[in-house]
Each structure stands twice: as structure tokens, then as C-alpha cells.
Length: 221
Picture 1 (tube, rainbow, N blue to C red):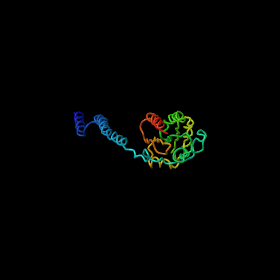
Picture 2: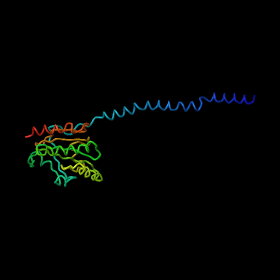
Picture 3: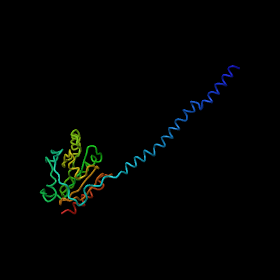
Picture 4: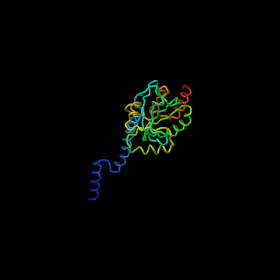
């Protein structure tokens, strides 16, 4: 009788205390899952908002005078020259014969699409140099510790067109502004005028650039 009374008393205490530990554990995963389900849309919205963030408007437009620049190269041995002066290729003072179009591509070691474009630009340069195309890459890496990576990429992809050092981004600011949406490519005619502006493009440059180069060379005098 004493044991029965004690058993009844314990049952009453447990009932008053609320749901069992097992019940509580069973509910926790469901509650956690419910909380996670609520969090996911917020993360997706944040990602969508970031993806939809507009790029700054281009500094240069088609028909503008291309900013003249000159600079030392990362690949002087491969290019066969120590430095490049754009004024010798385009504009009123151009004196290099045979040049009809200059392609200026901006490049950084942290830009995946830029590195992916290197072999395509080499191929484009070789295929169209005799027709009057000159290709120049402008490397905007500021840290000198990154420069060996540029040299390595140049060697890996056999880049024999000039890769200009723009350590202080003096060239980049004149073409891209304070923000540098990469990849970025410009076509400049013999007259020194901008013929094409492409910045922060999501598609592969091969999908549009070859056709643009052929079109401009075909119409160049």
C-alpha cells in the first residue's frame, strides 16, 4: 500500500511538471527545421538583391577620345619592348605603320574571367595582327607580391602582347573610374576614338569580341 501511494504521488508530480524529456527532444528538431525554413527565404532574397546590384555607368562611351597612356611591362622579354605608349598606335601622333585597331583589356590576378580570357586574347592577337590589330592588357594589381603570379600566367599562356603595369591604377581610373568592374575591354580605332566598351560582362568574351574585332577591322581605313 505504501509503495502504491508513492507510485501515484510520483506520477502526479511528473504530470504536473509538463511534457516528458523525450517529448521535448522529439519537438526540438521539428522546431529547428521550422526555424531554418523561415531563414532560407531571407538568405535567398539577400543573394538576389546582391546579384541585382547595378554596375556603375561606364566612364567612356563609344565615340569618346580614348585616354592616352604609357607604361612599363610585366612581360618585356615576351613582348619584345620595354614599355608601351598608346599615342604611338592611335590618334594624331600615331607613327606605328599598319595599326588599325587597338584592343585594351583590363586584368587582375583575382579576376577569374580575366585569367580565362588570356588564351583567347593571345589567339585573337595572332589571328589579326597582320590585319592591323594590337592587343594590350593592363594589369591593375597593386601589391607587388602578386606580380610573380602575373609573370607565371604570362608564361603559362604564352602571352606575347604587352601586359602593362598599372600599380597605382592611374590608367584604370581613366577608363573605369574609381570602381573597377572586371572583366573590361575597349576597342580603340586608329583615329583614337573608342569603338567598343564592355565592362563587367557575364558572358565569355569569345562570344562577342571576335565578331566586333572583325567588324571594326573590316570598316577601318
